[in-house]
Image 1 (tube, rainbow, N blue to C red):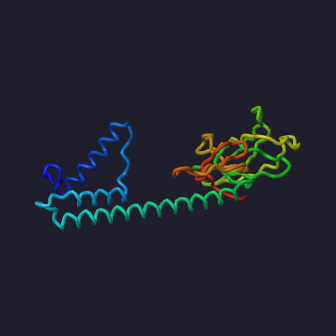
Image 2: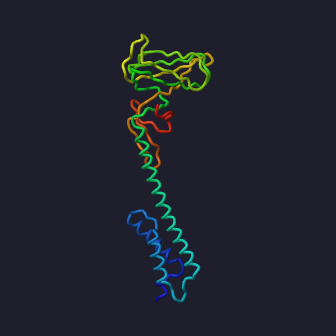
Length: 231
């Protein structure tokens, strides 16, 4: 065997890896990860092409075998993680299907209201207030009713609208906007409201993204923004 054609130690493995990367680069494709089968083939080829006058040391072979074992373990772990992820996604999709048609509570100022029955909501009060009011507006922006909640301490102040306007007549069903104000230290301050909504459909997360609930009259809302499920 010509010594110029033989490669000693781990240089043969390195040269093949460099050749592999060079070939991928010239073809315009990204170099793929070195699999365990390719690694083993390189190792066997390296052993066959040793310089008999200067063979590779046993310690170097042991180190490369250790690398091969580590590579195989990592690929097995990756396969196991993928299986767990697929199982989790299937479980998430099953849970998501059970939410369709149920009511949830989210922080919003708009709700699709069935005025034939009472609708419950709440106001997020940043501090105690001597006068809390909630204005109910129809889709044209007209004030339909003002709910006077009186004096409330800080936190959640619950309210109920019976679906009737200021004249006591039942308002038509549809989308309504709820604007809350609180008198805090003599200043009328706008407050956010929490209102119910119906889940029409669910979009499961992809690649780690969050599950989205598609709510009637509100559009898509992240599951993390939902405060109550199944009211």
